[in-house]
Length: 449
Image (cartoon, rainbow, N blue to C red; front, top):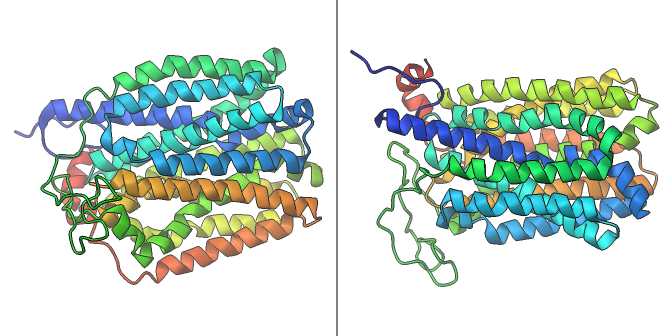
């Protein structure tokens, strides 16, 4: 008789104990994505009017601070992302979540542009950067055959934040003020930090594999420059992809083509969301209706995230890359050329499709290409690039607005970027090994029940 099957993605054999650890890790990653919401542009931008008014900042001045804070956060992440490879997840979470709470408290206390800059840096580095990087790395390292579904389930935490937090924040701000909302966020993060860390007590780092001595200047990365040809096999049993070091990934031209595509959702979302109030004002749209469009976006993201996870487990990440940006590109063309507010809702729905697929793709693409042994180090470079994209979009768009270049030009240019990135990923010089999902279709189907 077959053993009873537990719900949710299962990684590989190992009994009920392994299933419980997998479920705990999924829940922990879900909470990390949820907590990251306070550092995401969709949440921070809700208070843009109050922040500019109290700090006497122009649109360009506030966008400049946001740009500097985000870029500084990207640099900090590039230097600290490897910590997920070298320390237990519980320790990383116990440090990161309270530090993010400190950033929300700093936002509530800020009375001058300099403290505001520090608060924005902490929010962007730890919220948008470190928490999502940690969650994606843990998922990619733990799951192999069901990696796509695992990522799609865990990233629902971010979708829940997108659906609930804007509405809740606006309602609370009407009663406790915008600073009060940030104080409440700090309290919730402190409470969530310990409970989330407890879920990772059984998390295990990849099993060690025989490896050459690290090259000088790149500790912990066997196969670094100076030792050509040395790579590690994947640490996870059942994962056929050879593990590559960060240095080897950076020498691969395909890395940059894929990076251009995976950075597009961050670039588009942050550019449009950061200037949503100005866009609504310029087109005489209702701010209430504009905010309600986030519900459409969240629903589309959730549905396509779940669908994308199942597709990835049966196909491969790079097989879907040339197509996932096409809906977003079409939505940007509509938003750029249609002044009626239905164009906004159409964009939110179409961009939600691309964003939902991207959440699963981002978690599955890099381990599929480069294995899992150095996943944290490689992904830290990727997340850094995404943070740079999320900073450059609002900053450049703000400068163009100050110079009289309207939203339609920005939006159409972003659409062209999406279509160009899709074309580049369709012409990759090589493809990864067939995904575990496709090579073990029967196993995936059995675990789906």
